Image (cartoon, rainbow, N blue to C red; front, side):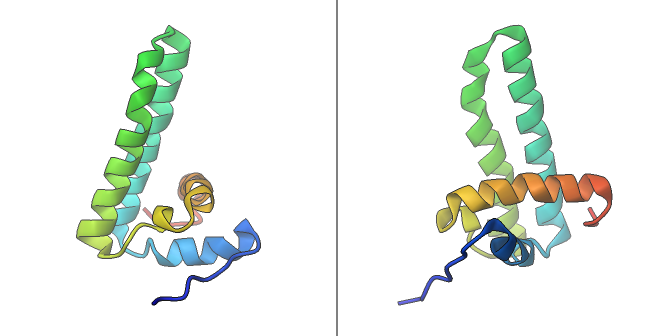
Length: 103
């Protein structure tokens, strides 16, 4: 049985998260999915079309999981670290926009 690493903080987890996103196509799919999640959330709230919110996990996880299973060839961190992984996605998104991580 594989031993799961324990992270005491997000700052300890984030380097692991980035190591799981070494493939450029995987990062691009994450970026596209997160961009669409933000766009859908804003559209739903600003137009009061709250039924659109059910698309958030479908779009967000859909793009990310395609990136992991087909390009990164690993298991998404979401399965073991759901909250840190969600945070990691948005921090990586910010880091891509800021130029800290290459897209």
